[in-house]
Image (spheres, rainbow, N blue to C red):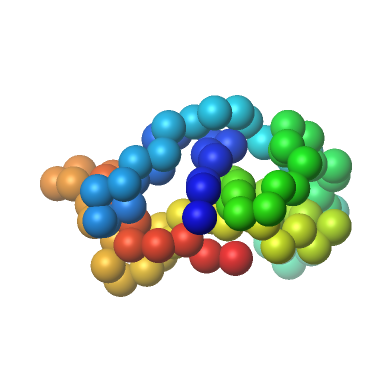
Length: 101
């Protein structure tokens, strides 16, 4: 499988593979009125994604996956909440074990 990283950061997997950014996918968002300290988020159009290609997964943020109305199955996000995520002494993510969809 080929992975193309469309986040602004290099993504490192625990197994040593590294994916530098090759582009940037973005999505606009707006918010509903606040009611009882809670509001909803409304996602706009995703921009900056290449067309799907056979054998290629596109690394994006989880927000891009959540906003994706086209149900593209080629989008993955770093599994930052996985228990095997490696963090440095300041708590910053160093690498993740896998991707999520």
